[in-house]
Image (cartoon, rainbow, N blue to C red; front, side, top):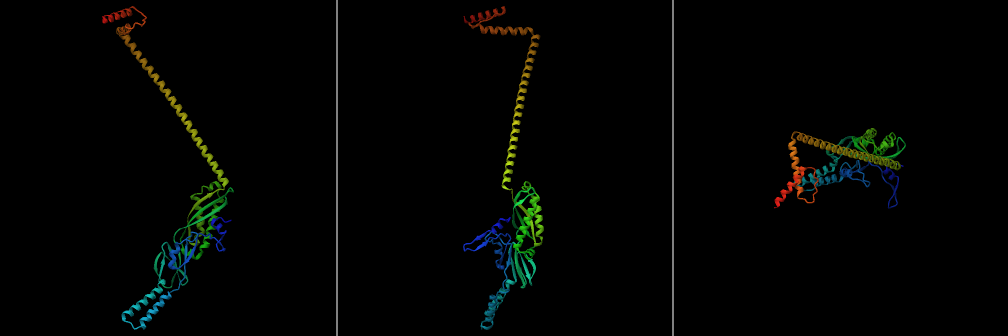
Length: 375
């Protein structure tokens, strides 16, 4: 079975409404035929399958327009035979000259549409290539072909090519072609033959590339593989004035079971990597939490140490003051005792454990003072 889906379509008979069995075309590089005046429209008009022609063969026409020459003869005869005035006779002669020029004008002027070049012949031989525009030529120069100057896209699908490890791979490649020598394209090969040659050359190059590559490595075909493929194809096209400017891989497909297995393996690898990341994150969280707890403990320990140091300093300072000023310390102690005694003197429910005579005398003095205040 053909590697090209369009060629596979060509192998299927298309039943028309009148019962005639035909075959669908599969070629991608096409040509058409048109008059010189219609060449521009023909070069831009796609056929029923969406293909725009690359070459327009210019249909041969008579060297002169017979009807125009016939009209010139009639005008000239009228100018000679009829008894008319000088002014009208001059107009008739002028009309005859204009008709003659119109009759041979298509052999004096060649129009090449924009986006194309024209091939001209003289004496049955190719003479030169004309760029787009209007050109004045000799009457014996003929326009034979109109050829596009645009780049061409050429699809090359190859199915079930065995790889280096025996796996059938389907590859779609898109070639970008350019025409560098239009005369070679027209006179060295037909467009249909060029289409077949391109298919055969490109498919052979793709098969050679796939056979030398493992199946999984084929999924990574990139610029290096595309450049090698372009070079192999371009070497076969130089004779026909065509170059391969670029190759792009549009599809690389493994068999369904292998693709599903590979997808499952990659999914498992992604999930495993995600689990490793989560595990690493959890360990980092635990480590951060342990570090935080240790820092909090260290902070509390430091606070206790600072508090103990402050208390020790306070006690040491107090001890120094008591040692240096014993009388003042005793006075402060007695004053504090007296203050407490005064607060308790007015509370009838308070039970006082008397530890010394001075305290009792202080309490009695405080009660007497309070009673005196009431009286």
